[in-house]
Length: 556
Image (cartoon, rainbow, N blue to C red; front, side, top):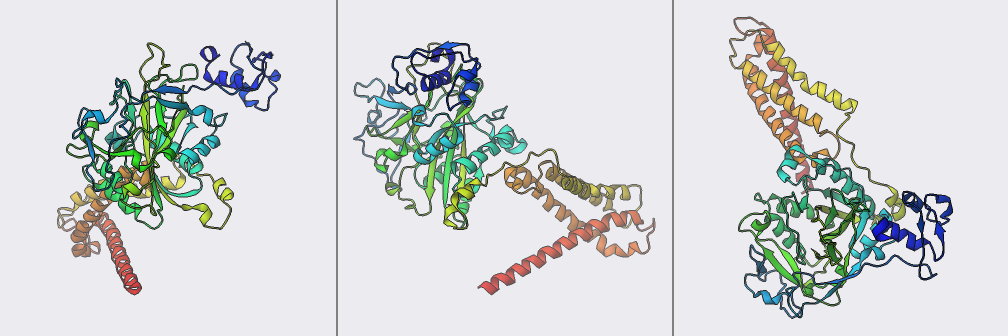
């Protein structure tokens, strides 16, 4: 059944029919089960005659595997996991720098352990739903989530995504934020969800044609580990500083990094993923003593030359429980925690930390058919700052609070009436040019340069605000580059306005007696209006500054 009709069909039929029954699945009325929604799926198949060996209701067959997992350290390896201890470093070819490679198992070693990897589909409720997936995520820190994305282009260029945007920031980011807020963490106040503007792709036609074959965890155990890894990829160092600044705020209680890993570009139920699946280890069965604090030259994986990441490898332990999801499709995403820390954790004491991030690796599936094409996949690592639990408030029941679903932000288009109104007001400065051009103002020869510069900068700022809807709540964070550029233009306009004040205020008497010998009325009005607006803004800023200073003094 699995080979002929697909894995899901086989699951459904084995679950709900018994020996000797014969069904024509093109006629859904004769599948008299409480799971009628399955019949919509079965309806597309031809008549199937079912014959099963036993009359008991049977569960879907398991696809558990026994394989060698690459990169496991030997259990006797002595690892110093203190924060200040020297990390076990890897070279550019992923061999160990200060240790013999014999401290790790190799596939050809006679004593290389055989690891059992459980078919996680049999441990997750059937059918696959958002709620059943979330339930498993809460228990184990990973799950398979049903998700049909609308992403068309899987952008892997971070700079391009930051400047020009992409399907990742416009489409995927709100999809993932909805999953996190409404299903994975509905019991918490989620302070912020930071989805990168690009994803990490693997496989043919991607920047990373190799696969992550080697048991690892990407971000270490402590906040210092996490910041160190961020700094290894960020020349400015601002990412790590911003993480610490946000983590230190009163509303933030914890930080998570959640990975969304999925096959892409054509994996269906009839043609599921069969090559290099991903295995994850249940964090509940891993202790800090099982981990090895490792470092990788960031330059090897697209980071800064000379910088080291803070990662972890794993020592073999027969008590570890490994899982994978066979036959994944494009409409499924494997979700797992990569990092998690809370303010009441023993900060920067690695040996005392709980392991909450899932170790993972790609591996060779012995059931992969010969000639199977290489895997095409993508992963998106989402940083989530978490506040307090909703049930700590006591204002309403947790179930009532969780019913308040988060809705994704509205798309940038169409625009609202108020946004069109703001655009008309903002680009009104173009009228300054018409008022100034063709008029004489020999007393202020720089007037035309000021008017044109002020109008152009103002129009650029207003068009950016309009296109990216920066006046909508939350859009400044969703489009940080657009917000930053708009802010720079705003400061530039402020500086131009001060220049205009210096030009027009000493010559304001020309308004009362305009003349072609001094300055006509058109240029004067074109200069006075923006100069007055900037003067009012400056007075307001000074006033707010004085008020804030007085308030702070009173508090002291």
